[in-house]
Image 1 (spheres, rainbow, N blue to C red):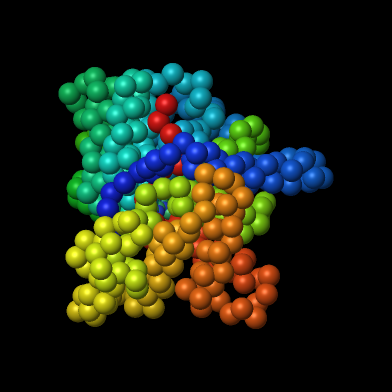
Image 2: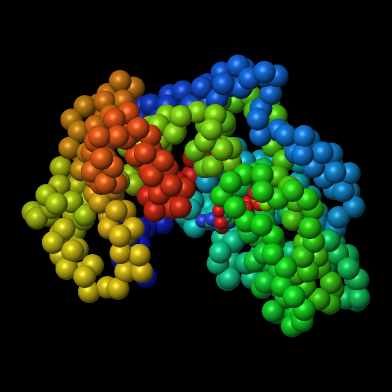
Length: 393
Ligand SMILES: Nc1nc2c(ncn2[C@@H]2O[C@H](COP(=O)(O)OP(=O)(O)O)[C@@H](O)[C@H]2O)c(=O)[nH]1
Ligand SMILES: [Mg+2]
């Protein structure tokens, strides 16, 4: 375990008071509204993500949907509802469809479990998955194999089945296709060349439908597909969540606004309290009413030295950022249920984070943009805790 993980515990977004949650919603709406306005000002008032390639892919997928044995709808576990694929909205949940909540490592396992339980209660087959974790992939592979066998209803295994991965951009379809291919191929003792789907943090990298073998007896092929997202996302809050999680590129709204939205979520959550032990002012066991446990900052530094960090500089920055966030929220004496006071706290955090990220004050206005980019990168790679942005119905 790397030392940066020591202070992480598994949790969803535990927004405790409705006032603070409402403030975060205000920042979400700001982002979503800014995106809508930007789209409205474009030449054809059309969503830039809905390219001709995506339109063609949507038609191709609709044609193929009835032909495959099983559909795996890949969603982002941080936004289990907002990442629903519109193409499948009218498909009633059936034994032909699995909802895979990918990126559970970013959402937290217990929170994701609550969501898979919810989908199961609505008669959908659902599972949480982490595309980078072999054990998790084995579980998904087992579920796919069981489902295919059940649907075919035969004890013979001399047939070929196809499974289609489908979903909005950046949810990890290609990463899942690669991992299923890798794990399935080994367990089936398949020979031959390993194929690779292109995986990228930039949305829209997969341009065509490609098939990957994931099992023998029966032969099962998984189809990696181009992402599809409706050209019209009417709900501004959904839009802001798609932007924050990286489904839609950052070019539609300033990174600073997206980062402000993230900070409003963090400040309204319990997450920052887990970083109390990193505080410099932490020698008496209590920090601003928050019990610190027994590990002080200096003890933490000592403990850290005994470990062998893999990426020293990056780990130091993450630690510094967490500490800065903890100290700024816990020492703030305003009421963050009010939008303007939350705004004041966020402005203070931007200034403090400049030092944590080693961004020179000489950068002027650019400094905030740089801080925002770095902060979003940490959030999107899970180094600032676990978050589920949708609320269970
Ligand atoms: N943390 C985490 N990142 C993932 C996971 N699956 C995919 N990713 C990352 O998400 C980004 C988009 O993945 P990709 O497979 O290209 O998404 P696609 O557009 O749905 O095909 C890439 O940076 C992947 O490395 C996961 O389970 N956990
Ligand atoms: Mg892809």
